[in-house]
Image: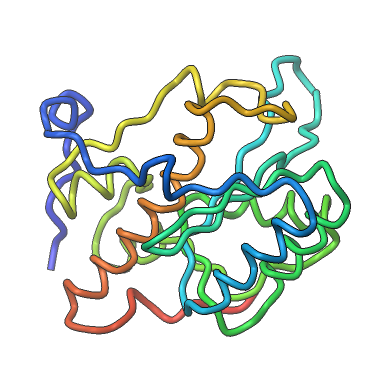
Length: 209
């Protein structure tokens, strides 16, 4: 069965905004104790929304030193891990390397490659939701904004200023925190909506990486 066409950007712009997880439910994780507390909360759930952010590079041939943040989300909370402190990096790496928990997001090939290079771990059970949409007949690459438009008929608010901001900063702005957390949280919402569309409890069974 052929999938319906993706909405054009101008069509998405006319949609009502998609609800976002607010700052009151987002935790910025910068220290080892904070990371350990976040891990305890995350490990109670079988699926996480997953994304990363990296400081942009502007010069030709300049290699990224990212990721600078790793975002993991449940339906109730989102956690933005900053990777300055070794203990925080270690906990984030252990979470991503844990098998048996789905880490669902979009465009994750570069994210996982950079994580392996920076943290020395191989993320397990990563599910790039774009592959799920492709298996359902969508031919163009699907990002989180288009997926939200297709499944919820809503427009995911994404700030270009936040997207290209300095993610290596030790003091992230509220706008950065909202942007980062909501990409992971929206991906998790998409994951569950895909499962509901097929009457199953999950969108797909991911392959371990």
